[in-house]
Length: 323
Length: 247
Image 1 (cartoon, one colour):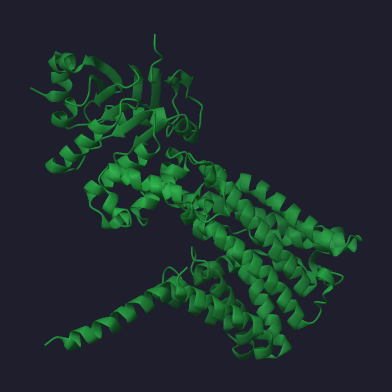
Image 2: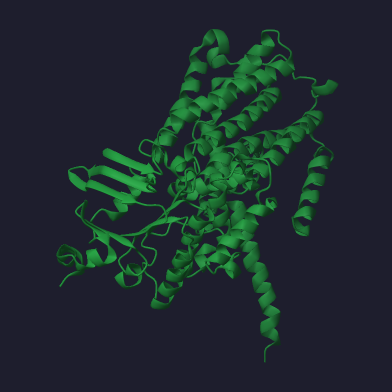
């Protein structure tokens, strides 16, 4: 790590830590928690999208499986920790199953299968009235008390979310720099060559699918804790598409991109929408502009812009010195 | 009798109605240098693809040191000691040369499954990769990105990636294609330096360079072996003149 990254990391960490004090307002502290939850969703889909080149349109399916599993387990009388572990484990297991099915088809077929699987989860949630409450949704009884801490109020829930998020981010960061991550990126760029180098491309992709499913499940449990409610609307295709767009907007294949994308979309949806009636148009406009000028997403685009500016700045004194 | 390094028997492959490999049998002994020649469309690269598993054979058998490869996934064949280079460069263009070789080394290393350790902290992989690059004269270019290198350098990188795996049988698909005369000499010298515990099967059109390299030659034509024998035998054979060398 260079000194600049360490400084940048320290600044980010400091801001995230004192954020509730800076914001003050409970509504906005909750908004920050939401951003973190969606950022984790976007980070998890980016493991597949950015590093593996696998586009999934069924990511909200995990919210369905893990979310309902968590709520139902707690409602059935299990303690919160058991329920959370059960929910994540079950949903990750489904990720393995979904992965095996989706990886049967390459490219467009893969997208369509993930889409179909996501829609099946949505359909089941919608129809299984006895379990899920159907269209009306079901409530989660209460937030847990992790290690005895009360996370019912906005700032403490924010810190709880932040803690989980930081652990996840660290793991995904390690993942992106690991030998496995390098192999995954190789299978994205040259699957045939990777096979010829001894890599099991299918298994690399499947394991990535499962790991992405795991972190999406963790985010799902956080989502349930935050909203204390889940209905089929939350796991619709639109949710899957939004998570995907967060990663693309911020810049897939970068670590920070999905976080930036999640922040922008969540804020436009929830904050700007109170001031601008046509916030959907605004979101669309942001997309078009970003894709036009920064086709690889905001983060890579800004980095490129920054490099160009600093190069221009360093060139200027040299040309002035010339006769 | 020693087991052949590579034994192909009655291998067949059709693309729709077109037989690309009609009935190919060939036996390559350990340490041998075999040249495969033939006009365009003779099925040379198809033969390689069948041996590596990039394509599924319709019938026949491929044995590597006696072990049947048909029905085995490509990556498993690689773990048994098979390596190849591609006629059309198949590299990781946006990565550094050394990373290309590291990916090659990872392919045979258990660490490729590790999602937690930091890749660049595995110094031995990089030392090993650096050695492989030096072997093909790219030691000073290790940190360059593939897209910044010349075509000749990329050809040598292909070779470095294959050699880094210490294969038992190496399939070279036109390793000299598109190279200048000087580069051909360089690559030829590299090929000559490969130790004899590596068996080499090479497809090549440049007869001037390749003829001197190979001990035995197989001539393919329309998916069939037309002539096979020592260098002198094949060159002298009238059928070689007819289908390949021209009058």
